[in-house]
Amino acid sequence: MVPLLGSLTVSDNALVDLKSQSGLIVGGDIVLSSSSLISLSSSSNITVQGCANLSGTLQIDVPPDSTSGSFTAMTFSCKTGSFTSIVPSNSSDCAKTTITHNYTQTSLEIGFTVNRDDCQGGGGGLDNTTVYIIIGASIGGVILIAAVLLAIPQVRQRVFPYRDRKRFTPSPKEAIY
Image (cartoon, rainbow, N blue to C red; front, side):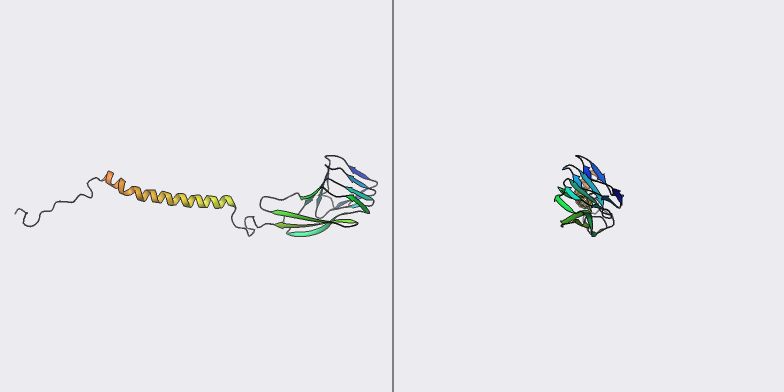
């Protein structure tokens, strides 16, 4: 925990990154501007011994191997306002992190769920690109085989024009001895 004696004002476009800290203790009030960004991990929190004037964005960093969990992100004596948005910081294309939050009289509780159904090996199967490649290759292969099979009789007639011609074989009466 990083102790701070006194109040903390986070100005516009400022970032307070506490992901690598276990937390922050503010001895007075905390005031967050509407464009501020507070970044926390699921193992860190902010303790405000005074009042919390909340605004801006709270970004939650969820461990990559987690599936779900909850923690207390902030405790305070009193609160005005709320975060404009509370978002995950490490969602990917396949792993979708859902954040839930609940303000109580003296705290902000965060819950998170990570859904990996769309990830390779995560129970979701193949991604869309792989499926499209397999379908395209299958259709292309069928078309190629059909084209070759249809073209073979025509190719054979051009290469061997006399191949299917009937041969003259004399009957025994016509045979000359």
